[in-house]
Amino acid sequence: MNPNDLNGLAADIKRWGIELGFSAVGIADTDLSQAEEAHRAWLAKGFHGAMDYMAKHGDKRTRPAELVPGTVRIISARMDYLPPAAEDSETVMQDGARAFISRYALGRDYHKVLRNRLQKLCDRISSVAGSFGYRVFTDSAPVLEVELAQKAGLGWRGKHTLLLSREAGSWFFLGEIYTDLPLLVDAAGQNHCGSCKACIDICPTQAIVAPYEVDARRCISYLTIELKDSIPQDLRPLIGNRIYGCDDCQLACPWNRFAQITATDDFHVRHGLDDITLAELFGWDESTFKEKMAGSAIYRIGYIQWLRNIAVGLGNAPCTPAVIAALQSRKNHESEIVREHVAWALARHQAT
Image (cartoon, rainbow, N blue to C red; front, side):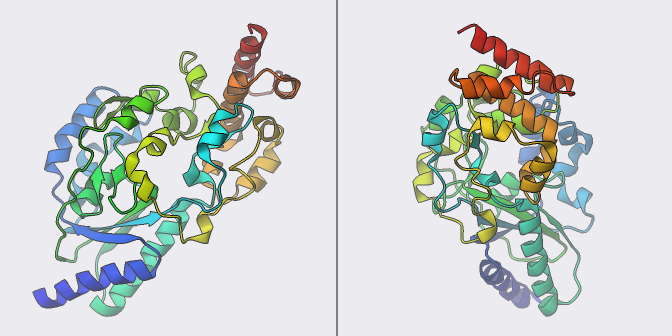
């Protein structure tokens, strides 16, 4: 294709992306050399914790053409996920008997939704440009998605390390298409955090150890989702009733006053997960968990980790007969990790 055709195609790709339900689409080159040094330093500090996959691919995360040979451009897209009519997050978190689940996980698994839309976008491109080289990603491979999205002009990396947009805050998912099409690139996003440090101040575990740097080992999202072993005891009281993920840094961010409610039905609340008690969730047996969480991002943590997280929440909950009864019902559970966290929770209530 000649340069004029490629420029026209770039504009078409953005228009088609919007038609497919994305809220914004941008295009970046593959140069992540500036991010590479910072990423290596982050790994060297051990801030990735047990997420060995963050290191095992070497520099492929910062060198897109090594991950997908032939790549010269990355098409980056974002899709809003904030569900309509969900119970107010602050209200839920202030009621220790209720379970708080990160807003992104209240609906269907975003991996499947975004991959499907990105594939449709690729099909649309091929219908015009012919066969081309590409690979689709949605938080599923060694991809520096925030850096790429910033280069593509979709926003900037906030001090909490999430992407921020002046038009949409941070309540959105990101997805990428690595391609061999030499498309016209967009201007990079400019930082608008200024002197604000609301996200740093609000973090329950002080996981944001410096602006733009998170120690994942302290992050509640890491502790409740990525960590498969016991949650460190000193961090358990700080988790409160957050049983899957943590949105505090986003809730505190002033840019999220511009957040957009999702137009995608898949991200609407399912099974009343926006307003449900810890005791009720702890009463689910494994078959109920699998039935309710089928098609959800939560499914991947598995039933045992689910119970582990809820046990911590119950240990931090008000000491009521319902809470104690729920914990007692699992104190002899077959899983050692569940028994250990239940014993910790019961001991906390006995000490009050």
